Length: 242
Image 1 (cartoon, rainbow, N blue to C red):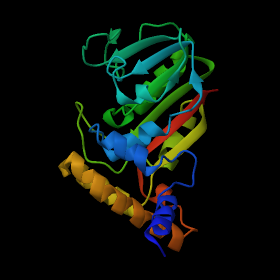
Image 2: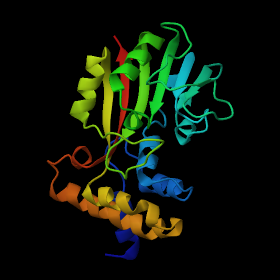
Image 3: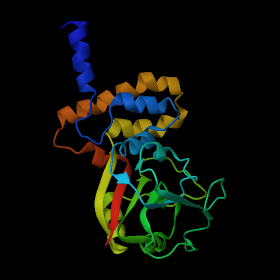
């Protein structure tokens, strides 16, 4: 086998089969920007997704500066308001959503964004009840929650939920689950994520392709196993108000 033919096979070997999984090159570009692998995979999931339009409320997204905004498809002319517990420039409502209502009317929002917030809350039913109050009938709640990552208080870090727990949580609070996607690849990438903060950016260019390839070998050896679901770095969700 020539080097050219081997490299061609290697390139195909590194591609993803599922449409929502990004290619290695896209992940490497984001890691060079300083983004963790888990956050990168979570963000890339939203690229090319449904267009978000109308009145949009973002909870805890840093006044529109969070990285997921580079990937969400938000239509021009949409109204984006932000809620945060910390006073930042551009934040519309500074409050604690576990204790206070957002000063917006019932059913006034078309979309609510809740990215990487649920793990920092200790009263999930109260918060989801408030999200349901704010959404119009058929309005959607978009978000993500990490799973296999380090403890990261902001200002607290309370929980990790499995997909079963998330499904029950949303159903209990009056939402229909439209999408609940495990974000990950396999056990090697799950282990790599635990070291992510210790790895210099340039080293990802060497190490991440190796880890990516090792998980691919597992896919080929055990095609019946759903490794992303067994070793999720995070979950992305789209739920709709009933």
